[in-house]
Length: 293
View 1: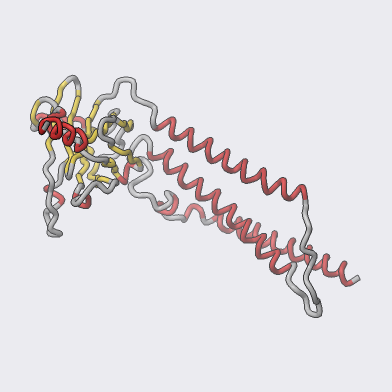
View 2: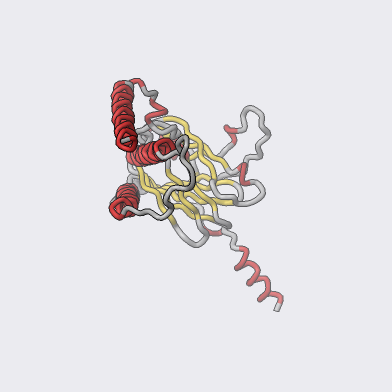
């Protein structure tokens, strides 16, 4: 009789907890409209529409965290419920039965994680394929060249070739440092393809507000495809430890109107910087050894 009462009491508590959880969900749903924009975007830098790719990347990030939070809340709830419902009662002695199993429950615990991983993999792969789809005929191709410790930018726009040779800006921590950094100009609303290469060691091209980052490996070319949607100034940096002055390998990004972009190109030198200044330590060592022989 006492066992039945205890079971009924447990059921009552479970129903009560479920009702409270449902009420809390309704309250939280009503407050969604009041959630600040940074929270909606998962505290990611920039805005949702900074580039043509940021909406998909933001949705993937936020929805993945929502799924993880739901799983966490359910798991924490079940753990707390087990600790309360099956705690040692007053007057009970000894240990509960140690060997017990529930085949349907164990199957569920195996299948649910597999389904979750499969769903996350599907959406991640879908977003990655979409944002990495090359432009058929991009309006602008920028060959970004990483080097210790600055950046070169080779522009190809409307059949015209221009370049900017970056010089390392030794940072002093004083006002005006940022103005001496290399500046990458991009036209708003036009298709851009970044061709990423390196002159020496592995670097990594990263504009945090664009939510994309890609390694720059000597001897290989990697690419990023996007459309800058929002005009403004953004920060860029190398995200791969590349040597002594890695922390100073920064650059500015200016997304401007197409007219202003063309005006900036006119101020740059014609042609592209080639591989003359590339440095491969391994090849240099081999060449030096052969010369000594």
